[in-house]
Image (tube, rainbow, N blue to C red):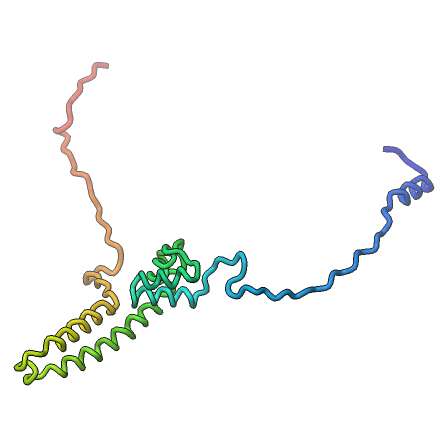
Length: 188
């Protein structure tokens, strides 16, 4: 490191400066309409409304019907299982944010089946029982009761009275008496 004169310093500073270039012109925006509707290229997330529809289809009309619907959208069978569980993906199978939608769909079907069951039971009269052509009406009643049973939400078992939290079990070792140990005599 040395000391230089002001003139040498200014000359070297001027030599080190880079000339300023003018920036290139800004490109103009172009809007391109995509001929493909839907999720778009590269977006693999299924819309939540479609998840709910496929889950509802699986719960109400069966897995095969839901698989056919999902296949038309390019959705895998494992995702259909997750949607039928109320989950949003196979990775979040333990979380079920859409379960309330599925339960509402089941309740809607169950309510309708109950109404039909009551109508079928009202048509079974003493006169019809005497004629013995009631088999069709009884079959309808049996089918409607099966639908009601299938569409009812599962009841969670109630915890035992007095146990509102986790149960802890403590095991303590059995105490041994001093006489149970072997005596060793040591000479010092």
